[in-house]
Amino acid sequence: MEVVKIMLQSFKLAIKSIIANKMRSFLTMLGLIIGVSAVVILVSVMMGYMNNMVKSFMDMGANTISVSLVNSPARQASIDQMYDFFNENRNVFSEMSPQVGVSGTIKVGTTKSTSTTVSGVSEYYSKMKNYKLEKGRNLSYADMISRQKVVVIGYYVALKLFGSPKEALGQIIKINGSAFTVVGVVERQDKKQLSARGNDDFALMPYSTAGQLNGTSVPDTYTFATVDTKVSDKAVTLLKDFLKTIYTQKETYFVESMSQMLSEINVQLALMSTIIGAIAGISLLVAGVGVMNIMLVSVTERTREIGIRKALGARKGVIMQQFVIEALVTSTLGGSVGILLGCVVSPTIGNIMGMSSPANFNAVLISFSVSVAIGLIFGYMPAMRAASLNPIDALRSE
Image (cartoon, rainbow, N blue to C red; front, side, top):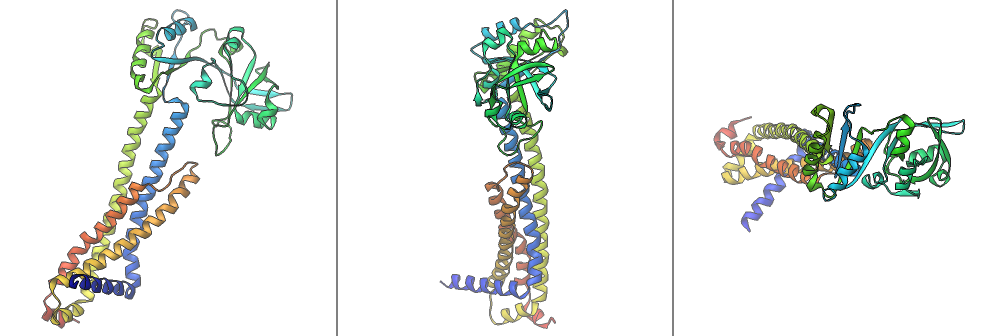
């Protein structure tokens, strides 16, 4: 009970000292507020950015593999060869789609037009991209075989040209002068905003029709989907071994899995997070030095007070305890305000950047723990100095 009473007394004296020196206490806390809030904000925004990147890649299909070919009249992989390879390895690959790029100007009548990304794809493409339909149907195998002039459009295109997905269905649009019927509208992908060149700005037609439209008999781009992301490395090896039998030079074919790209990006982002965390950590260290300096000034200013207390019988441990508690209270208050500031600012920055970045729990926990530790560690030296003062010398000081 005696120990608790002494600690409560020390705590009261610490609070009284902080209130009596408001400006000095505020300046001491300011360094911690900036340091702690910087840790929370930087880590939270970086984690939000990483999660956003991962989500974007997942939306594109984490199990997909892109194949780019440099075809020549002498050496080229035909669609039949690619489909034969795909069918022979159905235990590894779940879907495949050739991709043929088309000049993307869409016209409706003589007044309305828009530039968009137009691609010739197979009936598997929508499934690989996790596209769900708002209205109508997807492209079918029959569309590929008969080279039907049909198109599935993105939500943004439907909204811009026709006002709504419902109105777009069955409409006739012109792509490079050829008339196409809108048979489907893809469900909105970007829930936050619709914009040109965004996730909802595209049009899909049968790859056979696209090849006929731009005079491309052999596609130079393919997208494969694996049965599982765990077999991505095996799938890449199979594709490279197959293409090696057709193309003699490695520079004429490129195979890259989305999961591999995601792993590389995660490594780079983790490195960036470490660097940012280190910078924020340095700011906390500087704040700790500030706490120590202010506490040393406080000891110097209160030398006479310390001398009187020691002359009245205050033990060395009690004097030391008071100054440690004072430093601890200051750093805890500063850390708490810094965390509150970080929790408010982090989501705001995320909204400005168009992503979700709530305050990261680990960042909050670590930064608060560090701010408390700063109070203990950097408050120890001034406390030792105060406790070690000779009462006679202390009473002589002015």
